[in-house]
Image (cartoon, rainbow, N blue to C red; front, side, top):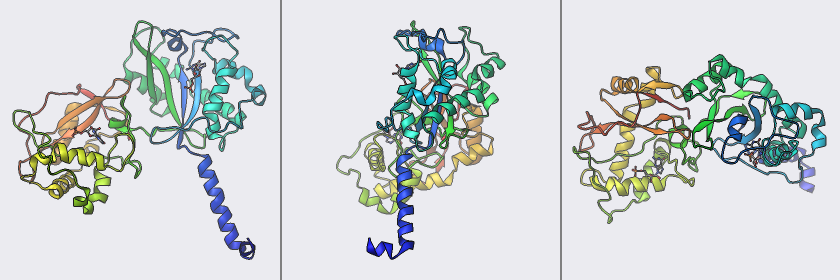
Amino acid sequence: MKMLSNNPLLLIKLLTLHSLLALSAAQDFDFFYFVQQWPGSYCDTKQGCCYPSTGKPSSDFGIHGLWPNRNDGSYPSNCDSSNPFDASKISDLTSHMQSEWPTLACPSNNGLTFWGHEWDKHGTCSESVLNQHDYFATTLSFKNELNLLQALKSAGIQPNGQKYSLSSIKTAIKQASGYTPWIECNNDSSGNSQLYQIYLCVDSSASGFIECPWPGSYCDTKHGCCYPGTGKPASDFGIHGLWPNRNDGSYPSNCDSSNPFDSSKISDLLSQMKLDWPTLSCPSNEGLKFWGHEWDKHGTCSESVLDQHGYFSTALNLKTEINLLQALENAGIHPNGSEYSLSSIKDAVKEASGYTPWIECNSDSSGNSQLYQIYLCVDSSGSGFIECPVFPTGSCGTSIEFPMF
Ligand code: 5GP
Ligand code: 5GP
């Protein structure tokens, strides 16, 4: 201590570092979800609902919450039990809260339980940015900034029990707000899928809407994903594997248990592997499990041609030979949540590589078909691309979404 007080410069540096650390510990999130619910879809499920004691809410979206969230899809919760919800701090907002943030949970009540739950669970995790009063006031102001129901109605989408395409709903909101929403559905009491909640993203200082940091095709499914320990991968295609295959469509697998994956054989490739072959499975890990799975299942079946080091270095080289994302972007196909025709995607890859790819789609968590994997074929000695002798059966519709990442 004596030394420090004799050296004010050092002391200032230490304090600055300390306060930065304190700040980063307090703000453990990257952005907010601003979530609104359609009351009819909360109420007509098996669980039913109760109107608030102040009466039936208007036929409009209501606020569910403002939720601090992390880029990897996880979120902090219940961060500060020493600062519980205190209704007296928002007494000036009560009538506005009753109309814009009505509760529908049973038993019927005046809303304080719902608002208190939202503050305690989510609001306490962003108190470095918004105190209790501002958490609610800011959320109300976001609802005011964008009239979701009006945005949908302007596009001919009405709450009248009819069916609308998911893309028409997203497009209508993007048109009105400038931002692509995430749409959550639930099931009515007969099991029909219906529009339930609309998510928009807000920057981490709660100053305005931003594009959501979407999780991409592997991540944006029911199984979700985890980013590797090294952080969020680049917004680019990553390698899945190099798979020996037969002309009849069948393939050999797990061919040599006596030659298991050994990461020491590819130590010179590891930093490139982390960039070009990132794993997205959970729990978060650095990738050795994924690479080991690929070698053991597929690589061991081509070891007459490629040893472990050759297998991985060949796959890495093939990726650098064709920049798939660039090929698509040159054709105006961007990972922005828009829909593109399957043929335009194939044509763009053929244009850039000279070869026709096979395109695999998967379903996002709302059941939408999206571009997932791109297959190209390589000759049996691993020396270069060839036209594929066979293509698997199609898994995409004619129009498919290319999500952000
Ligand atoms: P979350 O934990 O997702 O932020 O909020 C959901 C919780 O708030 C549930 O425990 C639910 O019972 C309660 N809640 C109270 N009123 C409502 C409401 O109107 N809509 C929804 N979705 N949840 C409500
Ligand atoms: P496959 O058996 O199709 O060659 O590889 C899929 C297996 O690798 C699955 O067991 C999956 O859990 C695992 N895996 C680990 N990381 C990833 C990843 O980032 N993408 C995919 N598609 N699979 C991964």
